[in-house]
Length: 382
Image (cartoon, rainbow, N blue to C red; front, side, top):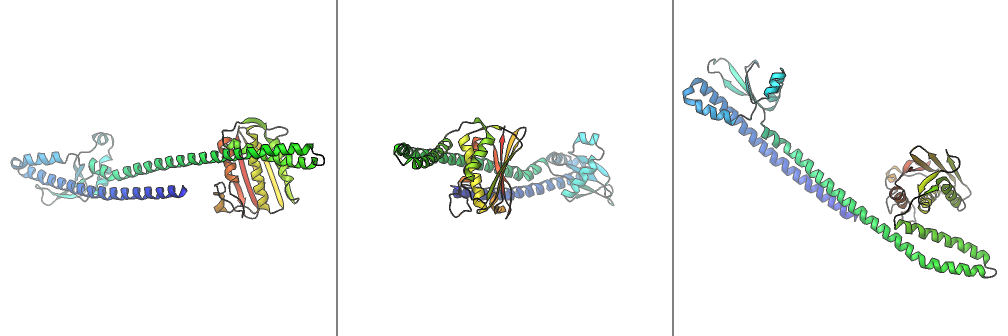
């Protein structure tokens, strides 16, 4: 699925690039054609005005027609010393309220087009210069590719977002289906095991075995319950968060090497109420503690720091293990990613799903240094 989406992204990007290049090429072609046509109009206008000045009875009609054709092109006529003689098609309001407007436009026109020489028929020793700018049509043609580029990328962005949402929805359905099926498959053997445990309890000499087996059965029941809640929408209830964290630390501590030290610190004395789903939240803490143990290779410290703030609760789980590489930090929550020789790489992805989707909180790697350890941070909003 991921490879298909990446292929589609590549195809869409190539199509977008092809559209933009084609649009830029054609727009540039049109812009050059229109610019050449506009220069010819100004040249004809200069010729017509000159003819009108020398022989008005012969060329008056031609001059009017050419002036009409060039009415959308801004023009400024100056002497060789840049003294303004005449101007056309400029913003009359700006001219009235801004004395430097014409000078500013003249500077702009000089940067856009070469001037057209207008020989003064009444003073052959002196030439006037006609500077002109771009018409509205030419400006629109020049800016059209940018607008088209924006539309194309906006369309691709919306399409990729829709594909991403669809992909996430499919993943969620797969997660929920697998979780429900796992809980369902565990249900039948669990019922049978519970019956066998009860029989062992009544059998003389098997009491200790029954007690130990019952612990494993209860553990399997807890696992089944967790998968069952992932497969549906879990309900959040007010629980003593600090107590749940301490209970999970005690559970992991009994199974951890003796050289691993655990500590739980908090700025709260007594209870710390929070809206959580107890089995799933316990699973989150268990996963983080187990990952910390794997990273420390049998010795070190695991510290849990719980802070109760005004609008949120912050939980930092810190270990003194080998740390996570900078390139791997962004991948730690990706399903299937693992640095262990054994494992499915689902623990942290499940943890992220439980915190962010079910508890509407955040979880991320706060800090990780090679050889010094890693700190995971959980933020639960009140």
